[in-house]
Image (cartoon, rainbow, N blue to C red; front, side, top):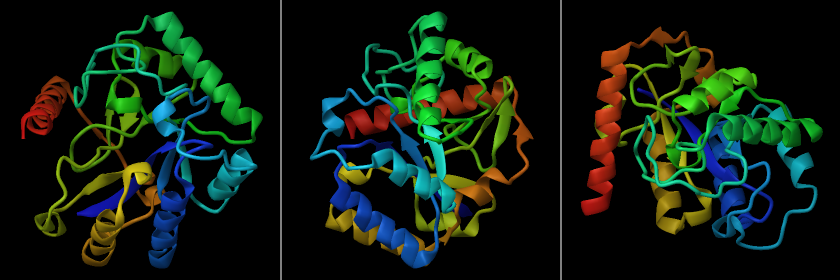
Length: 242
């Protein structure tokens, strides 16, 4: 199975030492990831040091060099205790929020990115939590792709193309066909994590996210989405109680 990489929680005052350590590892293997950029971060948990000077210029340069950018919510503040349509977590910035407000947040987030010369049609939901109103608001604001879901290929549902993430990475994935995404939070990464990621890069077939985006999506219906919802709910319980 081919594995693409996404990096969550990219914001001006994140842990830049850890980010740069992981960036160096990716560059060593020639891998260009997807990065989820928070346009107006208000989450204190993502403020881990001094803000990077010329943050937006830096992100723009990464995009120009081949990295893929996603809109990672709006302010990354969880106001709702909802799991939405993909209940890996039961807290959300979007799921449970009225449609009009979700549309406003997406418009404001996109406007901030575009004011800095960064464009994208990919959405990365904070905490993986989104609902039907999110999908409707995304379509109305020009977003066409979402990095979330489970499966072995990109799929189309409700007018959006989903790029699934990994339920669990293990050595047997190497023998399977298809594609998945490794989710990385560099802010919480330690030395052991970095060694584990190096092992994945050495032992698995890791690709740049742009190659993942180039794959033709399949269609997914109600049964496929129901299966995915159940898998997300099971993973939530496993993480909570194990």
